[in-house]
Image 1 (cartoon, each protein chain N blue to C red):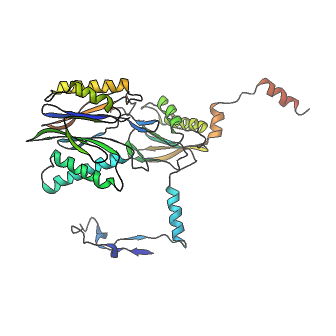
Image 2: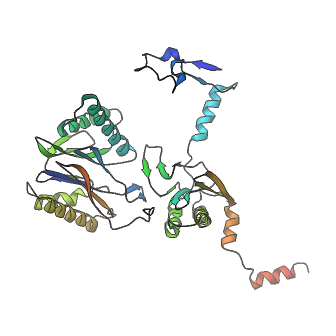
Length: 204
Length: 192
């Protein structure tokens, strides 16, 4: 029931993901952040089972950092996407990772871009995309309302529409979502959309 | 008995070791072997000891005073506690950071009681009672959980075992049996 979707707007890219960590019928956590900040200008939204999501995305993050340490310059979004696809492809015939990934990035001379990488190492550069059962609702929603060079307000509005549709139509829909964006100023968290607040540690 | 593994090294260290910080780096790497007549058997036993048996109920949560940990006695714990935080780690490589977790076959039952009674600002006694109660309720409903409910507190000065109660005794403590009039008549009649 994990949902990840994303789109490219005017000078930015956006990824939204649900935040529930589930084990069969149990929800272990409802504020688990599945959109990793890969580096200053890259986001990696991942959905997948068991330990694969955390282990694989952390592995990619460390290797992206290592490239920057060794060479003094960061990877481009396209290079990071192809590296990720390559690692999935290598593992595929031995010990595949069951993780689906949306990789969003901003490059200085290219602008924003979004890549769709599924668990059998398919790679596509896309304008909008989604994974999981939520994709049945968010893809058609985005097809209907998306246009290229959307403003941030329009894109967040579209993301909210998708979230509301998932919440109302998907059986066992995840209650909470997180939205992150990446633009020329970097990758950052934009907002949470919570309908269930975890009684967590009080902020001191 | 020390095992010299220098023969396994295939390359020199990347940089010269900082001698005052790690004086042992230049010595060949070794580790102690256990003094045992049957090393293979010992290895097998060691692996079996840490294999998490899944029929169990364990839980842990963070609150104002620190971390409370509780488990039934049927199997080893599935949670790993780190500093002021709490992590759930499983054998599939999953890792979650959070404030409340329960693991095992009885965990759904424990979650219900735990979530309902949880407040961040509880005293240590209240938190211990919540943990104990949650384990008790899970052992009541889950056939694969039971025995003794152990409760541990982890605070700034370390961990401390707070209690270890047999869940059968806990049952009658929480739900005492009042003798009915018929039972009382029978017990009065019996000497006759």
